[in-house]
Each structure stands twice: as C-alpha cells, then as structure tokens.
Length: 326
Image (cartoon, rainbow, N blue to C red; front, top):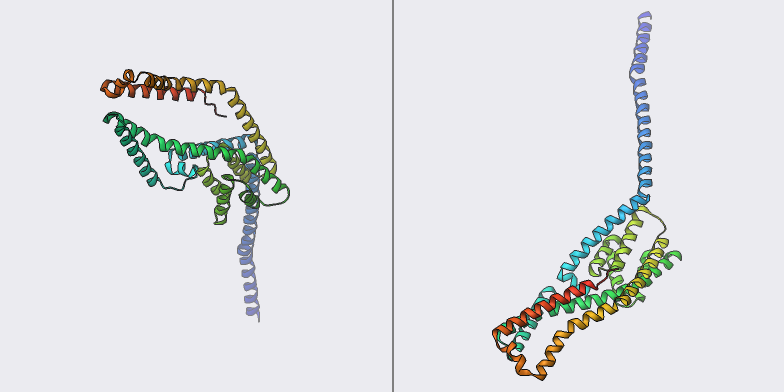
C-alpha cells in the first residue's frame, strides 16, 4: 500500500506543479493580452475621435473646399477642351465625326460661293477656312452658353426645392425626382439623367461629376462641393443648401449689376468694331471702282487679309477688357 500511496502523491504533486508553471502562466498571459487589446482599442477610438474633431475644424473644411474647387476647375478645363463635351453642353446629339464632316461641308460651300461671287482663289480659300473652322464652333458655343444660362437661372429654385423637401422629411433622391419632373429644360432633363445614374448604382458624387461634365456651371460646382463636404463631415444639409441658395441669388444680382455698369463699355466696343466694315460697305456702294481694286489685285487681297486679322485681334482684346467674371 505504501508504494501505491507514494505513487499517487507523486502524481498529484507533479500535476499540481505542472498546472502552476504551465496553466497559471497561460491564464495570466491571456489576461495580459486581453488588457493590451482593450488598451489598444481605447487608443484607436481616441485617435479616431481626434481625427473626426480635426476634420470638423474650419481649417480642415477650408482645405477640403480648396481641394474640391481645384478638382472642379480641372474637370471644367477638360470639358471645355473636349468637343464631345461641348456638343453635350449645347444639347446636341450629333457625334464629333458628324460635326467635323458638317464643318468641312460648310467650309466648302462658303469657299465655292465666294469663288463664284468673283473673288480669287486666295480669298475664296480664306473665306472657306474661316467659315468652316469658326462658324460651326461659334454656333455650338452660342447654344451651349444659352443653355447653361437657362440652367443657372433655374438652379437656385431647384436648391430651394431640395431644402424644403429635406425639412419636410423627404430623402434627397425624392427631391431630385421632383426637380426632374417639374422643372423646365434644361434643368429638368439634367436632373432626370442624375436620377437615372443614381438608379443604376452610381454614387451621388459620381453622378454629380457626370452631370458637371455636361453642364459645367459655377452653380452646379458649388452644389457638388457642398454635397461632397456634407457627406464627409456631416452636418445640417438643409441649412447648408439654404445658405448656398442665398449665395447663388446674391451672385446673380451682382452679375446683373456688373452687366448694367459695363453696358456703356460694351456699346462703345460694338460701335468701334462695326465702324470699319460699315464705312467700307458705304464706300463700296458709293464708289465701287474705288474699292474693287482690293478684291481684284493681289496686293489688295493681302491688305484685306491683314485688315481682317487686325480687326479680329482688336475685337478679341476689347471683349477681354469688358468681360467680367463673377
């Protein structure tokens, strides 16, 4: 019995020592690891709170606004340099290839018409190049500016609709649908495309960027920046958009005031630019033989081309002098 009792006691002793040196250390190590993990979680939460607080400071908001403005300016310059975007801005559905073909046809018709009208080959070629390169682009630019002007005039009303909808409890997507359904063109169709883009899975920021490519107006750029900053930092969207609507209306009033103050300079520039062609036309009707040498002689043709280039340069300079951007 004594050897058996001694063996049992030795087994219990060895097991107890093993539990002390192995099991006890393992439990204490796990406790230390849990404490460390809890400490790290607390530090990460504190760091996240500090980062969120830093993002809500005026300096951080100002930095985000500057980044958004720089990105919008880059997209606007890219849209202006792209003929496909210009056609979309003008509301035309033709492709770039069709536009270039139409420009070439218009230039050929203008050149042959000038040649049949009695001008020599050099002047007819100049007329064809000027009309083919300038007239279609001028038409596209005119249509795009007129369309963007209508969009800018109606855009503050659309912002007011969003503000009232948010205050009444409607989601922003439903406000977009109301604008697309009730607003006149081109504002309504633009928001309709925005709603369709959101419906196929695009984010609001991506849909607004696509909308800005087709309608690069400062009002839409400000709206995109406000939405982007609100999504990143939070805040009262209705209040932010209400302030934006007030700023847009004040900006429109300032633009109209500047236009009224610069109307005298605009009229003077128009009179100065119209005087040489008007005088040439009157002399042409009163003394045709006196002016025909400019059209029949090679030196006269060269002088006409130089005069047209100088007049174009003068009109461009005057236009830049009286153009004010608000």
